[in-house]
Length: 379
Image 1 (cartoon, rainbow, N blue to C red):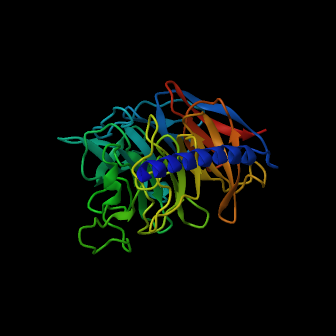
Image 2: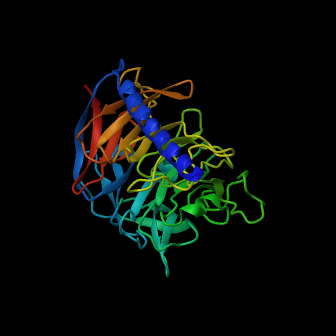
Image 3: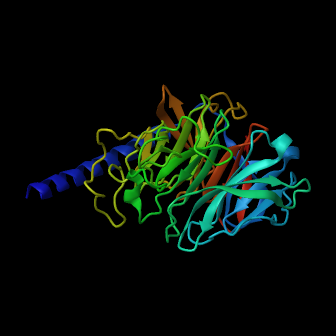
């Protein structure tokens, strides 16, 4: 009887939290003194685009989830698929996913991309390094430098966002593969983790679990579900967000060796209703999110705006795409806390990626077929 009462109390508490979150969202949506935006189409005809990176001469590099990477010219003309892409397990949420260019790209033409890598049994997220050929037609010197272990028979929760830190090391977000969520709490695998590796693929010096028995040395943080957004903050820290289950999408600031709770603590619930595990939202030794959404917005893509192209009130805001509701969220921060949230370009489509271009403007990909590359112009 006591267990039933406790479970009922937790359900009531979750309902109250959801109501408070909705009320807060109404407050955060209050207008801010910032310049409005309008979306203009740079390129259309893309097939479920997932990530965009910026090339010299105003060109773009875009991945398409079925396994293609294209150069988009400054005038929006789509190039043919690049040769040299390794085999991709393109099914469900899997495929060719994130891409970033190396900080020294102008000299070395190096880029990094992650994808769902097929194996003899199952698949997993992998990170590859390559060079873009001088004529832009193919990838050269392609090498997989990291593969998530173990491989799992699943088409869900690959994570797969890449961030180059100021020290030149790479962060990669890795999903829990859905059916293996409990492994997010274990150190002997890469499921539900963020890893930090060198550009050669080895564990980065200073990683928190190097030398610990039974722990994989690439691991930076644990207890993640499925992160499809990560970015470098102005102070050099790494921020990420992750999908929650039917509520509980989170924004987290990554710290070495920290446990972010999944699936032990969450503000979400099981699909179809009902608590996950003990149905708790906090536990000693596990981090609380900086911000969370109930109901879920299905976040994807994430960037801090470093320019004042949209007015000084927008500079420093965190921009996050919503797949579920098809808008771009402008999250205003003060003192390390979220103080306001505004919805932009509503109705543009499923926002998969958002990046700041070299021109200081924001660029957005819509994950549809046909999908678009959009440039956000100040009104």
